[in-house]
Image 1: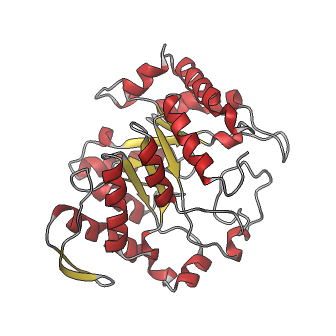
Image 2: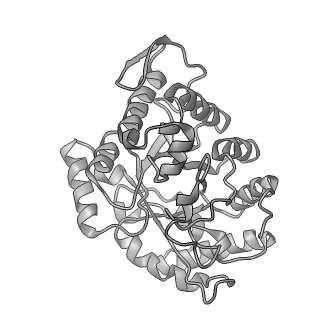
Length: 322
């Protein structure tokens, strides 16, 4: 396991993941944590996914955006996913500038997952009204749309207002970085944001089949092709004890079902399955080999490169989780 402060080690691991065939790296964020981070009881195994209320408040959370900038500088193909970015904790112009800069550094490889997050303590510490987090996020999205498309740009919202601002340089990708959205359930606000701004759906856990039907119907009603939405699944290891790694093959058993549902990008947290960071390249190759076998493809390169209009034939990409 890496030391909590070995940030250079994390950058090195991202480069190794790219060299081993992985498609993307995802880093999540918190600015600060408070007591509510562990209100539901701490996770039994520290390798598990971090969920609302199961974390030690002292867990290190380095700035994901600075880390992704560093990773952009040492990679050429890896997609950079700013997972669980919390826009309401910043001003939209500041965050738009930071995201545009990373997108320029990476030549358009940035993907952003904006969220309102869950920690009331974090909002309180930063002086942001927790009850307004949804409307704050909505204004971020609308303001980004203006500053990435127009020079000068103006915006007149309830929370944020600016006129004739020049945000330069803009993102490398016209219109700004691609946006994914996700959450524990497909509530109306999440569905609205997905249809209006989204290029990917990254649910927290396994969505219900009714939710997937609702998403496809809403996309079609908005004259958007539902198959253009990148569907992001994931595998989760089962730990035999509180200090043991999980079995990769066992975790991969859910992959064929997810593939059939249209989830062709899969998020995996390597720390669930390996203890030594030196094992990461072999782990990446083995994960891709098992994936190719499970879904009937002969070569993991075919998985990454294949392109089709059919949702069930889209590429199976792999992401290294935080």
